[in-house]
Amino acid sequence: MRRKEEAGPIDQAAGARLRAVRNLRNMSQTALGDAIGITFQQIQKYERGTNRMAVSTVHALCKALDCALEDIIPPLDVPAVPVSVDIVAERNALAESVAQIAKIVQSVRRTGAVAVH
Image (cartoon, rainbow, N blue to C red; front, side):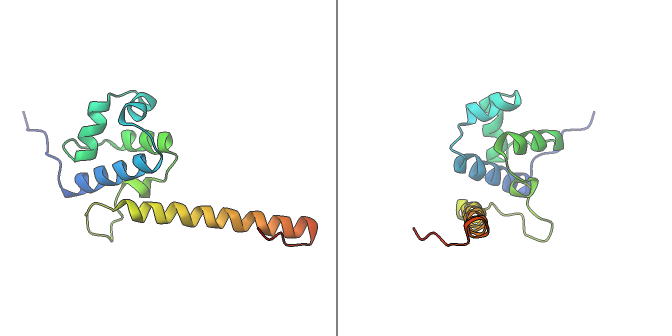
């Protein structure tokens, strides 16, 4: 019987990215585990890069965290290093800014006037 392949740098980077997104969503390991039907201990192992995540698990995690696969899985053209919380926070801040701009545009189209706050 072949030995199970150990987690490597990509698994560790994915785990760090998972932790960053989970923290950004203010979700506990227990809540995330409950959402996808696994224990908080398993979430800990994923976040530490101790255990590898199956594709189906990553998909379930992304659904539970309402994030894109790219938020968890490091892109191919980027070295497999853990992402800082700041990068994920910046992406979310940018998305929030875009949403606010869209609201302003809708308001201008609807009323013809710009509301200044």
